[in-house]
Image 1 (cartoon, helix red, strand yellow):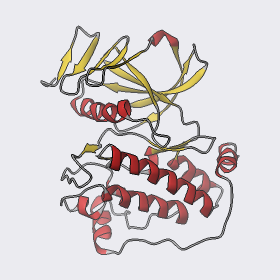
Image 2 (tube, one colour):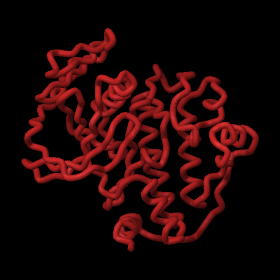
Image 3 (cartoon, helix red, strand yellow):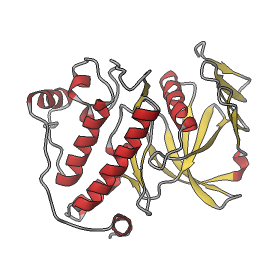
Image 4 (cartoon, one colour):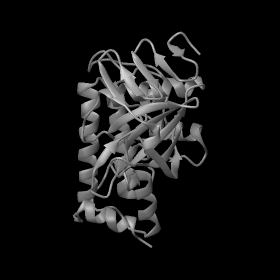
Length: 284
């Protein structure tokens, strides 16, 4: 443990500097005076969804509201995961935006924090990518435009309002539902800057979508997330990653640094996102 965390007899803990306290009954934020009470007995686990940077995610059912939810489980006794949990909660607790995954609360149980979030019942952009490749079709341009606009709205909020760099924009962290909503998730390695003109130097994130200035270890800012966004858009449209990554991380880095940024050719295809996602969800 470090000086910023206080454990209380395995019943809960507190991030002292941030004023965030989590116990068996829910989560409190002393800096904002907010408190979200949760009864763990109200939830049942239905299945396993997958694993992320800071923990694994399960599909749960909230019995009082008859609502499905996503439950991320994070082990607080691992230092790296604890740090990511703190960053994730700092964004989720204070953010209400239609293009950020919604946070319902959290509780402490057997050494882990269970974060309750809305369930995005289609999955991530990675799921969409795989399904399109399997049926050998490209995503129509209007759908790409819709995805792009909603991603940018989410990025604009965390950049301009929260002064936060996400630092891990990739297909796995862009979530979709069958109503056509597009939302950013997983803020475990995000970085808070003092203003919209701030910079940072930390080398964290997924190399595949990392901007050149981050790869070289020089100062970077909010525009590094836009680079990641651009690569995702290119990859969705062309179904091809624009740089050479077959030789591993070093070859990928050399490719990013030596070749110009990719560009996308226009298309005239049309479709509705919601109906499209439902079709892709049920494809055989």
